[in-house]
Length: 226
Image (tube, rainbow, N blue to C red; front, side, top):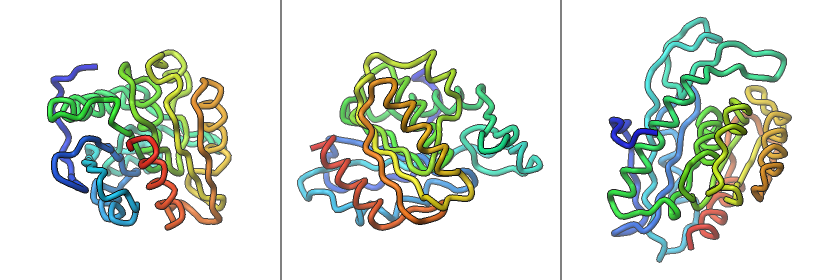
């Protein structure tokens, strides 16, 4: 992965001066970086934990399964097959380079990779899973919300020994009509099969987040970044 790649535009929220940790949080298909910026105060992080939250904006691209409609996306989805999503692997690799550049930027600003969490919702969560499990340097954790593995072959071929035991928080709505909870459970099982500990939560909701989930994320971040 190239660390000279131009950075995506981002929104940043810092919980204290001179952050010693960072969370890079990817939005879902068709949204943008502002989607989750407002949840930071609700996480309940300790006052003495200074974290830089980075909310990147994915590039605009046409989405094949949405009749070619152009929207912000981390990769093209070619078509649905039952519950499976057939993702453009070249697009996934491009997004992995974007994430690597964001990690390198945090490193240059004084936050080591081992103090970085990759997080994401839906398609952004699919990138968090893939980038996190294949990152060559040790991360603090992965947060995967209402999501799935977009390319099991890519993850299995490029899995990183450095992140073989990196903790994962995975959460899903049991009534999700967009990304069925079965996909979330499949990703959980596949991640555990690699050896990563997964903290799993589900709630009776659709393709969204809820306050108990946000609090669970806050507890997870506190644990892995404290």
